[in-house]
Every structure is written in C-alpha cells, then in structure tokens.
Amino acid sequence: MQCSLFILSLATLVLSVVSASSPIVTIKNGTVQGRHSSEWNQDFFLGIPYAQPPLNHLRFRRPQSIKASFQGVFDASHYGYSCYQYGSNFNLSEDCLTINVVRPSGYENKKLPVLVWIYGGGLTLGSTADPQYNLSGVVETSTLTDNPFIAVSMNYRLGVWGFLNTPVVHAEGSSNAGLLDQRLGLRWVQENIASFGGDRTRVTVWAESAGAQSIGLHLVSYGGRNDNLFHAAILESGGPEGASLNTLSFYSAATDNLTRTVGCPRTWTDPSQLACLRNLSSEALFASNYTVVWNPIVDGDFLTDYPSSLLAQDKFIRVPLITGANTDEGVSFSVQNLNTTTDIYDSLFYWRNYALSPPSIRKLLQLYPNNPATEPPYSNHANVTYPAFGQQWRRSAAIGGDLVMIAQRRKIAELYSKVGQKVFSYRFDTPLYNATVPGSVKHFDNVMFSFQNISGAMGPLPQYQYYRTLSTGIGKLYANFVGTHNPNGVNATNGTGLPY
Image (cartoon, rainbow, N blue to C red; front, side, top):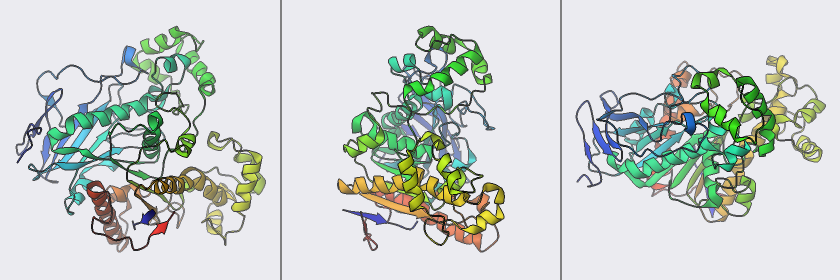
C-alpha cells in the first residue's frame, strides 16, 4: 500500500422548505429557520442546540441528548454562545453546545457529502463563531468542483468545564466530557443532516491542532470501535499521540487549588466536592480564573488505553485519511532563552509534561546537532534577529515541532498504510509575507489557506495572488477528498507514490 503525496427529486427524508431569505428545515427536535446569504448563495443554520445545556447538575457531566421538541420555530439565524474560556472576546456562556450547518444553494435534488469542522486551541480556546473558521469559503470552493458539500461546525466544552478530572467525575463516567460533546455532535449529524440535504453515509471530520488531536482520539476511542459516525478524516498539525495524557492523580493538586479558590470541600474523593462545584453559579466558577490545562485522560471507557498502545494493537478506526503538518511547527510553542545544549537538555525533562528520560534526550540531541547546515530546518538568522529567544532556540523548536506534530504524522500514515487504508500526506511550506520569524512556516499558518480565508495574509502583490491560487487549490483538493476520498480526484493516478 502506498501513501500518496499531494501538493498542497428531494429524498423523502429531506423535510425542508427553502425560501429566498429564510430557509426552513424540520429536524428531530422540531423546525429551525435559518437565513439565506445572497453574497455567498448559501443557506446558514446557526446555533442549533445539539445537547441539553450543561448547567447545574449537568455541569462536568457527559452531554445529554435533547429529548424535548422546540417551542415553535427555532431561530437559527445567528451563532450561539461560545463555551467558557479565558483570553478571548467571544460571547460566552455555559449554555454553548450548539452546531452550525452551511449548505450551498441550488442542490436541492442531491444528497451532498458533509465536512465537519472541529476547532483547535489547546482544548482551552476556540469557537465556531471565530471569523477565521467561516465555513462559507470552503463550501463555495467545493461548488467549483464535481464534489460540492455541506459544512458543519460545533462548539464543545473547554478547559475545566470540558475536562475536569476527579475520582467522582471518573466514577460517574463523565471524564473527557469535551470529547464526548464532539461525539454527540457527530451523532446529531447522523440523525439530522439528511434534513438539510446531506448524506449521512459520507461524513468527513476535519480539524487542526487540538481539534486534530481530538479526531485522533476518536479514531482510537472505545478500543477502535467503529460506530460509523464519520467515514474519512483530515488531520492538520495534530493526531492521537501529540499531547501527554496524565493519570488521574496528576490532577489532585489542580483540583485542590480550584476547590480552595471557590470555597468547596477539598477532599477530592468526596462526592460533596463535585456537588458543590456544580452548585456554583456560572459567574462564580468563571471568576475563579483557574487556567490550569486540563487534558483528556485514559478513563477505561472512551479511552481504554494510551493512544500509542491502541495504535500498536491495531485498535483504531479504518477510514481514509489526510494528515499533514507545517514545516516549522515548533516555532509557535518551543521554550525560549535556550543558549546551550545543556539548556535544551534540562528543558526537555519537563517540556509539555512529557518527562522524557535522559537517554531519550541525549539521543534527540545527537539527532538534532547544533549545526544549522544540517536538517532539521533551523538557521542562525533567527537567533541573530531574535537574540532574546536564545542562541539554540531554533534547534529546540525543531525538536519540539517534530516531537509533537511531525513525528506522529509520519507514524499514523505508516500505520494506516500497513493495514491497507488510503492515507494522503502533505507538508505546508508557504511562509506568510509578514512572518514574525522570517522564512518560517509555523503552527496555524496553514489554517487561513485551508478555509479560503486569507484576508489576514493578503500582503503586497504578487504574494496575494499566489496565496489565492494556493488557497483555492487546497480547497479543491479537500472537496475531492470529501466527495471521493481521493484529494486528487477519482480518475487521478499517483505520480509521486511515496511508500511507507
């Protein structure tokens, strides 16, 4: 098996009535009314609840499906609230579990494939209302191909709201609630997307960074059990093995600090502690300003083992994949003020909680020598231009980027190829004209191109025209993949075939 490289009549189930300005659709829980965009020639259905509001006794609990019907017609003309987070300007609320559907007009007699976007942001930030994640660009580009599609995005809980880890939370089966939000959102797509003209049997999930990590964890969830919630995946700069998954006990101190701050019982095995946290007002919990990074854990249910072990045991969902990364991923999150090999050695003991062993660190330093003339990509110019970053900052960045993003891209491509599954890989290597570090292509730089939303990278001509061409090309490749599971199209041949 080869891993291909690419450069970057209404069905009776469709219970919809479309008008020029206010499209109306009937779904499982009632009738929703969206709005038509004449600018894009698309219908928007925004802010549709896909779960019960995770408030009070449902806070920190696995998401619950909506059992009741809407009272009257639900107004789906604007985005819902964004989930609680710190450091953003979104309109925030705990009542944030909503989903959006964007469909192109003129395809009422067809069942279109579906692309579902899951945002990244370290599982601490992100929102479907972020203008960077405007789905109209990708939908419009898809109509330029033979594979137009419907696009979907969903909010999910972040930070402590989505990933509180305590023995009581674990015992009630509510660990990894943010990931379970995503899973319930995907189930909503299966139950409702036909009403919008979508094909529930052709759903592709797509994400970047922590969103791609989330998809990676869905690929190994429940021991690789396939519930047919999605049928292909696009992973940009992330995957199942990129983040450290700590044990439950790791969060004991964090929970103690949180409960001390808000005045709740501090014995974390005491059910009254969780009850107290659930009884707090939304404002009081948010005001704790407790920003410790809460990550997924191996809970014995959603995650039965560490992703690396599950992958090694072939316990993963087989679906066609696109997986890729940017050239200089580590520039965005590497440790700075590193001037010597010893500085790097010491930093790697604790960097991102990986706790690498001394033999592993020494091997890494051999593989990444202090010689800018050799691979991996780092050079003296960045250290001269930004001396405060440290003389060996780019060396450290190269190690970090490969460790977190690029190595796992290669690993997952290799594993999927070995089991005979189609997988396509890319490297994004286009610097932005205003790159902070000249010549670097850092983490997230590709996203505006993937969304055909490059206003932030326009720059002077001819860069802008080149960016437009590249962005449209990526959009068409993605549309082909969503429609055919081959980014190069169904009739394409593999001219570069890179075997794994």
